[in-house]
Length: 506
Ligand SMILES: *[C@@H]1O[C@H](CO)[C@@H](O)[C@H](O)[C@H]1NC(C)=O
Ligand SMILES: *[C@@H]1O[C@H](CO)[C@@H](O)[C@H](O)[C@H]1NC(C)=O
Image 1 (tube, helix red, strand yellow):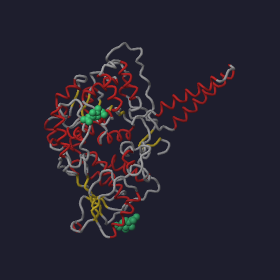
Image 2 (cartoon, rainbow, N blue to C red):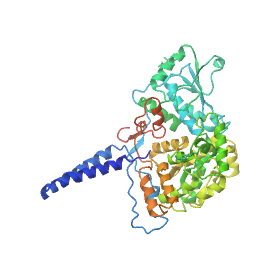
Image 3 (cartoon, rainbow, N blue to C red):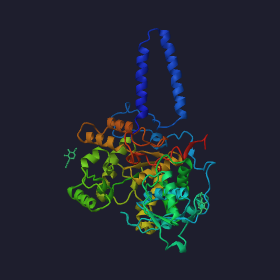
Image 4 (spheres, rainbow, N blue to C red):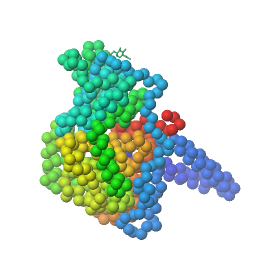
């Protein structure tokens, strides 16, 4: 996850040129080489400026000149400004090769599984699958059985009419299966995860015997990479243009954003994924009481679809696989340089450990707000019993924030980060959890002090983790077969380059 590539290259280049120069003696030769080096650097600079593939280092924050104060005065624009987008823009128009789809009398019914964002990206993939398979898509059924236990139907969460009309000419979408097809036997399929275009073309054989295919799960059914450009752009049109939240959610979401802006102008949205299910699933118990750890262990034991039961919490944490605790988030944001007065919107469900645990963050940043504090009881009533609808409000406020900070890399974090990249590389600071845990432990054991040297290390570590333009990462090297798909960066986490282009291209 960490992007060290750029900086280590620079180090190597400097070292090898230094050796090169030291072999030459004549002053004139040195002058010539210096000139050549200079010209070469300019060339490299121009060349790189045209091929932005990595985060660009932010200016190094100079801390040497500061006294040993606890709060560094990091410049305001460094804290709040988005990274340079280098003229990149969203590009989702079909290419000239794109064939508009016409109506089809073959139908795809879908059961969309998972939490809000897993469903959103799954539904967008199903739009692409319906297009590839030349099918009419029936508005998907939503998961009611996940941890969130939400009984919402599609039109409660999404703007159904907008979804249907926006995708006209791409895929025909209907609200319900025609009456006469309700009772015909369907082909019931669990499509293979991360499948290619070829797989779905093959699946079209099912049409020989069936008029309706039922897809039992919608998450991660389509590959992240190696799909035609037009399929990738269709996924972006589906997610970013067609799949809007329902009008009541959009409207309250906007009000919450306005109220935050009225309070202080700028705000951080913190996705604090410190909820019971996440801690039980990851087996992270650092900072919890024995009773709490035991409660989580029992929940994990009893949740059938979580396959890993025996987890060493210490190893999880050292590996960077745990969500940051509220206290760790406080230390982290302070080290980055945000002043204690910073307004922080906390996007989350119920925090495990409640107010007692939140107070550990509040002691660093007293200006914490939740939707429950921003909206009236009446406004929230309609959403109260619907976890997915509340999550949609959090999504809107997070998307619009000046800075987005996810404490864990789950579906919501990935979806928000990708959407922010798409809209113009808005600032997203992704904590390097593995690196931070190491520093926190040094701090704890007294090897480091909570002063500028600690801050400097944290800032250095996150210089290239602020959401600047870079291409989506492929699979981890050395991993073969299907397992490599799991290690790829998700398409919706970073739709660059397919749906983000330089202005010249479009
Ligand atoms: C799509 O399906 C319809 C019938 O449902 C058929 O008439 C049409 O030829 C198909 N198009 C392609 C490209 O297979
Ligand atoms: C968990 O892992 C740590 C570090 O590898 C080790 O020191 C510890 O003994 C392990 N705990 C258990 C209960 O296995």
